[in-house]
Image 1 (cartoon, one colour):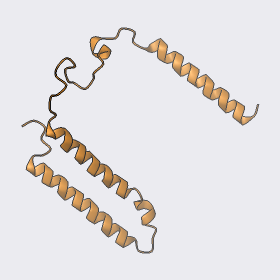
Image 2 (cartoon, rainbow, N blue to C red):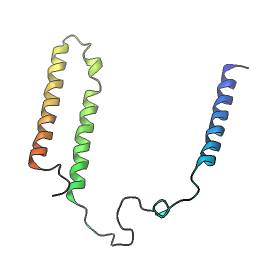
Image 3 (cartoon, rainbow, N blue to C red):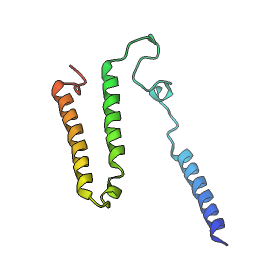
Image 4 (cartoon, rainbow, N blue to C red):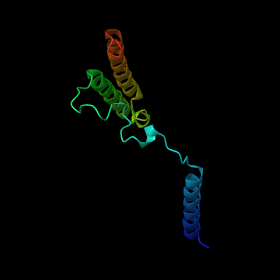
Length: 116
């Protein structure tokens, strides 16, 4: 039996075993929350034109900002192997400091407080 045949057989057996286990252990008495098509917390029978709070957008923008920070810091381990890693460290420190100051500013202004 070669390695590819063994891997395919093992994958198939594991998939069938996990699927069978899932159907066997699954809870068969769903409640009204699970049967509801909406899980967002809004009343599905109300008006669809209710305005969203601006706080939703603030949280989304903050998420995108810090997600961008992570994307900018991802190549850092490779950049430290350059000729002048102190320059890379300085730019990274400036970026983290700038984003931290922005977060502190939002915190002090009360932009992160959900309930007033």
